[in-house]
Length: 184
Image (cartoon, rainbow, N blue to C red; front, side, top):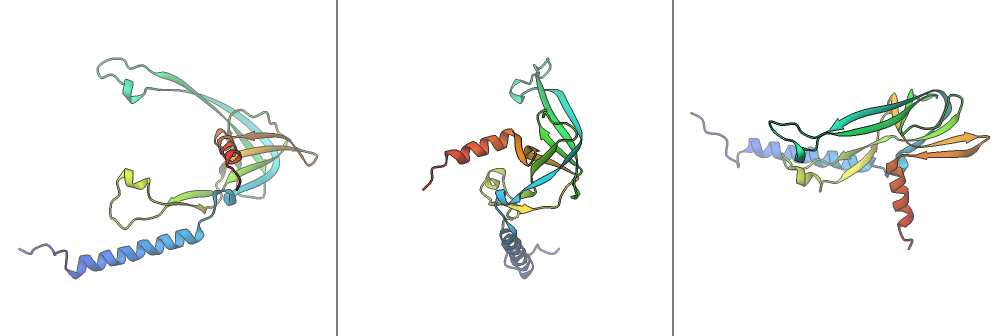
């Protein structure tokens, strides 16, 4: 019967060293290609060809109110979003945005899209608990265009002037937070 390799044996040690080098190299490359979120918000301009508004109804039961062997209460939910088909030279076919927007075919718009994804650095440990994941640095990196992109902000343009602006709730909160930052 053969004994398992000891922690001092060259096989696990070489694997660990190789793994740590790979992790370090990945993190260095990730930091090198990282950008600020604002740099990844790209404006797309074009003429709207089609507009579709959707209203969705749903329900949920909070886990704290679930009853075994009985009827659990459920609460109604509601969400709505607008899907726009735009003429554009980019591979983006559709733009979506939360809410029902007062736009129609023939309107010229500028849609601001986040063309990035948030990637987490790798850790040297082989496993990570959820709590530890909150402390791992994350970086914004550029990604390829998707056929359907979600707009953070849409500006309706007439005669080269912005006549209406529509923001997602998240972007509204971010812009308010930026306004409240004291200048030095």
